[in-house]
Length: 403
Ligand code: AMP
Ligand code: MG
Image 1 (cartoon, helix red, strand yellow):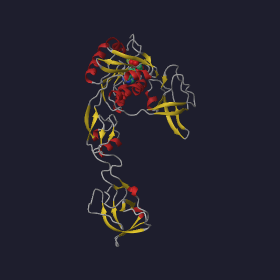
Image 2 (cartoon, helix red, strand yellow; image 1 turned 120 degrees about the horizontal axis):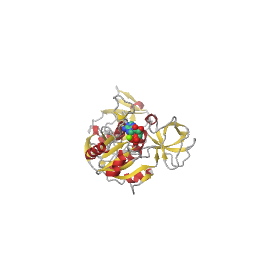
Image 3 (cartoon, protein in one colour; image 1 turned 90 degrees about the horizontal axis):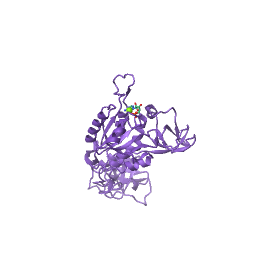
Image 4 (tube, rainbow, N blue to C red; image 1 turned 120 degrees about the vertical axis):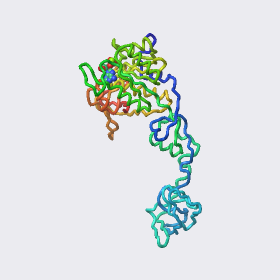
């Protein structure tokens, strides 16, 4: 592996990953299918929002008179329910019309008093305003969004409120980035599918389930392959199939220094490796390259490590490849409540729980953590981003990546 970057920092690995070509293809999605997708183009509004001046309150619409005093009795001359624009209704001085939230403002009216501050006399057909009517209860045409303005940029993740915004702008269908097909391939003779009986020496295969979940969380499509046995031929055959049918390959296991670490050996002999091993703990063994032109992340076999490396490396790759923003990786500052052992040259990612207190966010590391202990990840809120040489003493303020 002469010349291949080896045991590099996270930033160096990210730079290599972000140098890969992008995969630009788009499709259309109905709004109901657009949740969690990414916009493939800038989206302009087809209408003004609101499309017309309307009332923000149930109450009475009238003309604001700066010289009036209150209480003020006005004659009731009509009603405007939502969606009923009665062009003939004109409000003059001394008059008020009953109006519902969202209903168009009748001509002549420019202020609203909410119903709670009005006294109606049905017999007399009058309303007494107890306070001054308010111009700010009129929602003006286009005050939120102007027609033809770019409101959502390409790459934006369609969260529920943004899907609602697309509908408000008049779009029934939106252009979205095609979901990448992500092959998920576990390797190891010891791995058995959950639901079958274990023999001595066997364990349940769990990484592919976690990685499939992470792929869906990142907005893409997992394609799970059966666990591959530890032989060069079996692995080569599955990698060929995955490279033909998917946009990205994730393998787990088989990338360390061991004799049976066939992903590394095969990639070394027949693939193209762009880097191997990173200065992170846990998760130092990852390998990145391509197999027959399809990018491949060789993730570590230990369940915590494969998950951590997905968050640190694969998620940023997916965002880069599709030029999309993806779900956000939040970092918060937190104070260590338990000591965390740092290392001389690696970024240390320990699992912590977070607690919000008046003194700020507190990070606790409650139990023994091995990279094979998926329970320590399942019960954690975040990962410490402890820099090489940082003390990790109780009381230190550190960065934590929220899981
Ligand atoms: P390896 O890198 O292949 O030596 O695997 C490291 C450790 O992770 C070993 O204890 C494996 O049994 C375990 N392991 C590898 N792949 C998986 C998997 N898909 N699910 C659960 N554990 C795994
Ligand atoms: Mg293995």
